[in-house]
Image (cartoon, rainbow, N blue to C red):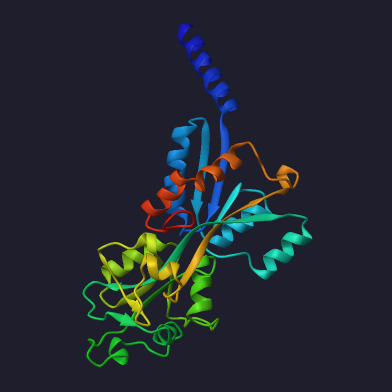
Length: 280
């Protein structure tokens, strides 16, 4: 009997605690995921009652989550599309955009590949299928069919790549589409003939980063606009649940304030990206 009473009391305590818990759902960009992961770890230390859900399945997924009200915040490595803005207006919604960091899309190959740089024109030719062997780029490179990897069309990184590299032409069907940046990284590590594009935060010493048009993918070159495949990173949230007024309290307000604070921006740099606010 005492055991039954004890179990019942514990269940009541758990239910009581859950009533005071504050839920926060963040969905979207795979690129922004490592930044948000660090933010949430630090944020939950400040407020242990927060119950956070973080998913990184692509920028479009996060923005769809705002439309169907399954996320509080949408991470995105691109701005809203013209169609999304139109749908937002028709639905009587207002998605606030916040630039939270800057990123360069790094072109990476296996470390054993002797290539050091590549042009935007050559990258386009590889991804549209005109070039399919390394020695077509340079006869001094070893002969080997290029294993080409890309993020899916739900990814904001893909959309930036399509705009800045493919010039909105279609990728060749032979390009291997993967659902996460980490999958790209693993394929580059395993395949000596591979090539892919990833956000700066995923670059490690296990990969070789190529210069693009002779420009290295560095913090300074991204900030000055010299590196040709650069972009801002965003968070979006909907003003409708707040009566179309800026939220000055609650978990969404607190999280945004933390993300843009000096401590939050320091975590952007820790994740390997470029802070939007601060020195770099």
